[in-house]
Amino acid sequence: MRRLLLTLTLCSLPLTSLAPLPAMAATAAASQVQSIRNLQQLETLSYKAATSFYLYSVLNRDPSQLKRMQGELASGDVLVQKIGVGGITSRWNELKRTTTNAKFTSEGVADNPSINAVDAALSTLTQTIRTIEAEQRTAGNIATDKMADMLYDQYVLMQVMTAAYLRKSADYFGGAIVLSQGPQVEIDKLAARFSSQLDQLNKHYAKNPQVSATLKEVTTKWTFIKGSFVNFNQDNVPFIVGRYNEQITDRLLTAYEQLLP
Picture 1 (cartoon, rainbow, N blue to C red):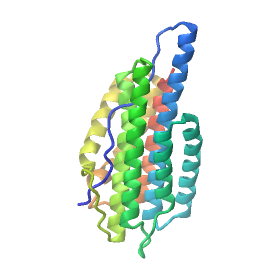
Picture 2 (picture 1 turned 60 degrees about the horizontal axis):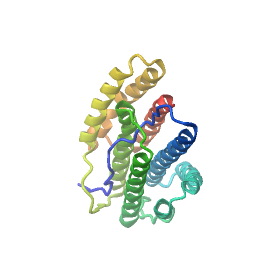
Picture 3 (picture 1 turned 90 degrees about the vertical axis):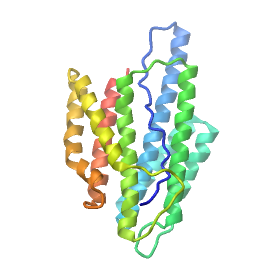
């Protein structure tokens, strides 16, 4: 079984909530909040670009996935300029390089070194984003909301599961054995965690009409696709998983943004 270099920290990113502050402090806090949101948005684009790359590979270099990936990378370029942190810029450029310069086998899927390079670049970039985000959160003394954190964590879990699934699909269809030095991503255990947290979120936000309605949509879609994650070897459907990943993650981000101040 393949080992994946997705050594992502599945900790939660916080929902920012600020108590009343003096005018100058409030302005500084608002700037800190915007900086954190930019980091979160870049993280989401990183996952989306990697997912589009995996689908591009699995679906025999589907032009629509290439176009999607290029659009996500272009949007990321804008955010990287806004963030202006050298460590993030270099790691973002590495993700761009690995996704756009991948080499492909005669079966039409990305070769082992290319897939490993994308995994490594994504892992390094997202870990760097998380580290800098945590530093800024501490420096700004920004309060967090535990359940909103969990809601964003659901987005991350779904992306990690999908990346692992699609990468395994490249082996399944391309006949390659892709090895890396990272720990194994156990998709079935992540799926169980996703289900458990989704139950908690549905209960917690039951009286919030907007968030509750959005989470119900997520629950319906997750019920349909969960079995594919749990039973990968029996039910390999990368296109369906990719499509539902997009729908679920978009709805999770919508729910999260509905809670932002």
